[in-house]
Length: 390
Image 1 (cartoon, rainbow, N blue to C red):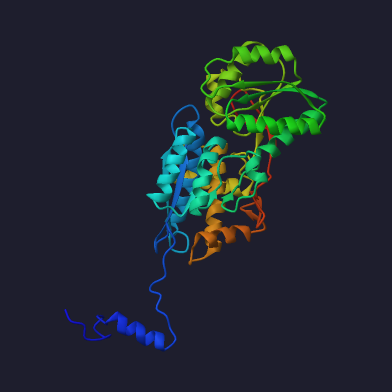
Image 2: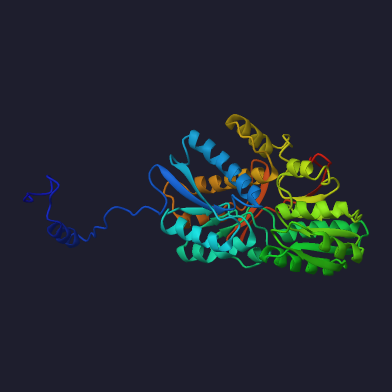
């Protein structure tokens, strides 16, 4: 077909460009869309643990995120775009997390990453996210090193483990308990936060009389219990997550050990299930909580969560699910503030511009040098049935 002119859409572009250049204009073509963003959709990626001993963390966290995304989509999306969550199972293995992250970035072409689980897994993923300039939002990780070394692509919502451990050890010091023991997960997560706990204890003049590692897949903790009992601590602080916590609690209770037990927030996910499997042996365990109780409907953010759960017919109901729900609410707020012309850099700026704010009534603080989000930490105690009380 021979070109006849501009009107028939078959202009000789070289001639047109010469004319534009002569008039002082340059033709740039259509604006390139941001990766993972179309006129109707925003694609978001997640790698987390959905199988194995720690699966409750990933399953519940994803459920909270999906609850928000589904509600937003039913209401027309964000700036007219629906949210698509692409999730891959990493089975708690950092190597698999890296593979999944590469797939999410290179093949799935996601706009941002959300809802990763565990310290070692985040360590494996962050170099890939940084290299590609992809925001990493709200990992279920509170390890101190991620907070002290500022990373412009990494945004937290939950309080740090340092804040949790300071709350626990400070509480024990106030009670007059100045000798404690620590049992920790034999992983990057456990070792890093053991170091944090030791530093906090030293600053508060609390002596750590024993620290004992336990393997993630452990099925027996009798030797660790014997070692801790021999040290006669005033309290035992647990820096562990997943089924290994139940293994330790089972053997600790069976040995008749009397020192009170404290755990950081990721220690127990399925509290009613743990209580049943341990025949009530969860009773008396004190935990740090980084979100309000999922039953505290007097709080607006929890009231929203409970209503949205009921409307969706969602059966999961846990602290981890509520944490995922809050994280997703903050993520959506960042997208809204970034506007219709959504880019990764615009999203980062929108989050940093939030300053001191609240989502629902949940307090947060962000800025160009502060991506840490929340400092909310409370201490609660499990009852025999797995319920929590203050």
